[in-house]
Image (cartoon, rainbow, N blue to C red; front, side, top):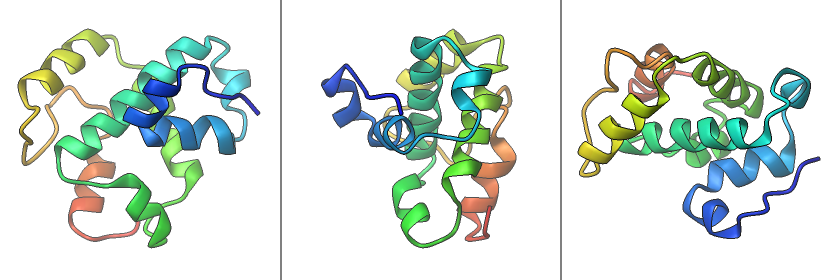
Length: 118
């Protein structure tokens, strides 16, 4: 299992810590660039928080599992505009009702917002 080397990032983005400590099946084989994986895990976590979803709380409540979060991170890595996402998140640091239209995980976030299992 991969350990988070930047402890400040792990504290700021606990999901990133959970993903790298727990490991996600096939994640490292699919994403050999650890920095890319960390970046997108942080983006998924930030996006969820921005739209009012606590992914760790949803995990604990059984509303989703680590594999689903791993899939969300992999979806995020397929985005061609992570910089646009980061700028959107910075501009919406106070929160938002929904993710931007460019988000590849909108369906996941909508399900969780609606209180449905994802």
